[in-house]
Length: 164
Ligand code: THU
Image (cartoon, rainbow, N blue to C red; front, top):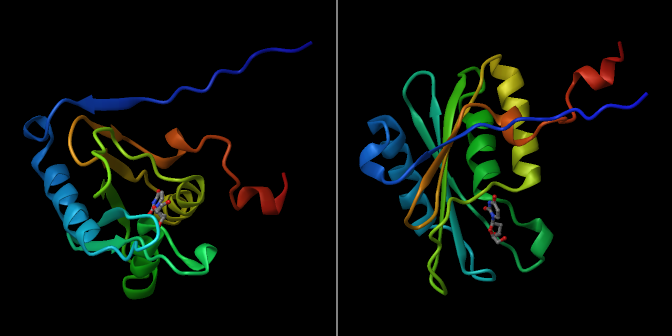
């Protein structure tokens, strides 16, 4: 017998920054500033991320490109690995991600790439609690997601290494 299993993702959409909780708007602002100093001479697509820690500290990151293209790294992983290096024992509570391009106007929320979602799942597991995700483009609507597994269901996790 076969059956269809449905997976549900819940996104809270806000029309403008004014409607967003102040702490989310503040985190997005740090992400926006980080995007301004991204090193993206090849794509001209500047991404900024800001990670909120349990102690209130905010750790920024931005994309770092390389002439050998795959050697570069996304903003989200730059920020999260910086947390791992500098604050290894402090829980990640939220991440805001935004992007801007000088070539076009990005008016939709930026969705993080699959590899960054996988890294976020790792930090969520490590923290033992959900990481709030706040997404925005250069302007327009904002998407808030309550946990990484919502945007990376069926993820590869450490349970799989142990078997049942
Ligand atoms: N990029 C990010 O920083 N985060 C994402 O989630 C998607 C893509 C970067 C990688 C590259 O420097 C540029 O955006 C274009 O792909």
